[in-house]
Length: 345
Image: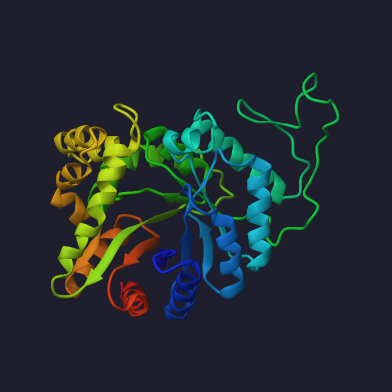
């Protein structure tokens, strides 16, 4: 397994980047840069490219609605050039609260849009004249629309790589199937190793059956909070408010992918209670309803022996990139420690 983490903004972006530089020396393979409704991810990725030398720089994720498909491709190619071939394009649909509430864009056809964007990006990186006729995107603008002056164009620059890895954040059955068919990597949030095959096995197999033979096997990126040592179990509590936010507040009744997932894990009653309380504005009460068993199963907090067992469980379930958030006085040392354990598996 490779080892990844997310860029930590707690002490400021530049301080977080300095920490990534030290983590890179300790063996970190990949760093994820988030984009919600704060600063954009791309500026940060460019800064990281200048400050690091080996770590892969991954968008985690760029929302598919906020840029045209060709701009997404141009952006990834630009970061890849700055980093000498270390860019990973992470894509995801985000949610209607952010896309419609902050960007003012209609949240529709997330699965179809993602599929079309992947196809366009790969055309751009191969320096083909981009021509795409889909439901969501038509490139160039069709005859009879616009000025009539549009024509197929290819990227002026020669990309460092003609195949930049595309990772997709997906949870629902059809979206996971599409990811297994089209993407280079999969980003499932709240991944539970022991239940992954039961929940997603059929979807992954269906997508893999349609996968292009020229694509390498798909990476699976998953993990959680990491804390090692006596009393480390208590660190799981740090993820409780975040789980409540996603399960309770991301979407409405019947339109929350994260709530659906927790139900599929077998926590139907808890998922309903969390959502009801959260949507009533009772966030603290909703957080208290998050099952302890779920927090344990989706994190790596405990004794050294326990954490090593969890590492093996993630690897056995098919995870190829362990994504951790180290909590402790010396996150760099924790990266070095876990990297050694992974290499010993």
